View 1 (spheres, rainbow over the protein chains, first blue to last red):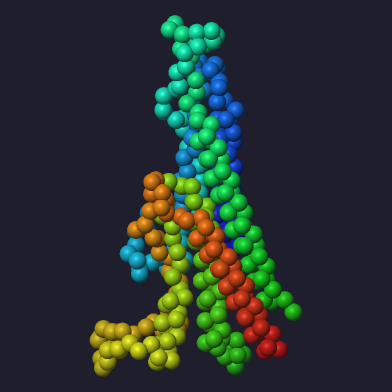
View 2 (cartoon, each protein chain N blue to C red; view 1 turned 45 degrees about the horizontal axis):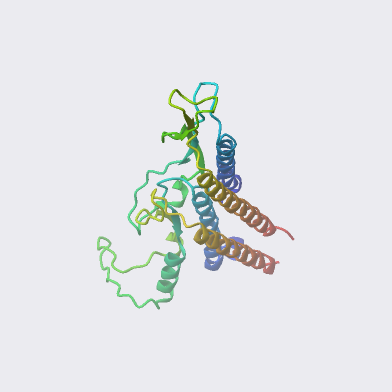
Length: 148
Length: 136
């Protein structure tokens, strides 16, 4: 068991989930932003996760890679991309950002979806904290072997 | 003589099991880190069953038929690996899917495995410690 590499695996997940939470918080904060610096309403952002390390091993059940060749190194945020789904259009001619026909384009942020994603991110974060605590406890027990 | 004291078969098995348990924690941690990654397939460590079959073969109590080998070039049939040859292996479970995006990591199942593996590791470390202390 590689002590720090094991904790780094779980640490990568903490970083990734924290970034995901930031993106979700940003989406929620801008759920009604109709005027961005680049013009137009705010577009929802999504984090794309990818495993870190070599994941391209296909194995028959019963075979396996030897212990020394396990390449999993956790998770990383591969990209923060924009959600291409269309904006919401609401009829509101009195709005300062209404177009010629009186429709306002609102951000494509669904508050309920963001809340559910936030819960999932929180649960994943807590699970990885448990993994770090377990790793630390196991290392302490291993150190106890040599103690008088 | 000292190395005979410190490396009886029982102790070698304990150390191997300890190493396998440490590897299992890494694999579980990797699964947990990727619980939200689309398309990710969980991995697991196979060791206990292989060790059990090697131990059963050692005692001759596994009941399997063994092919007789009268020549070194005969292929071994039904022979379990020797105790020293048992190693943990990591397998990717690519045949299941839990969510529409292909991810098959079950958070609750992995958390249970994490706890079990932690208890196993601490027990094994305790046993190793007891063996070393009893040599004193």
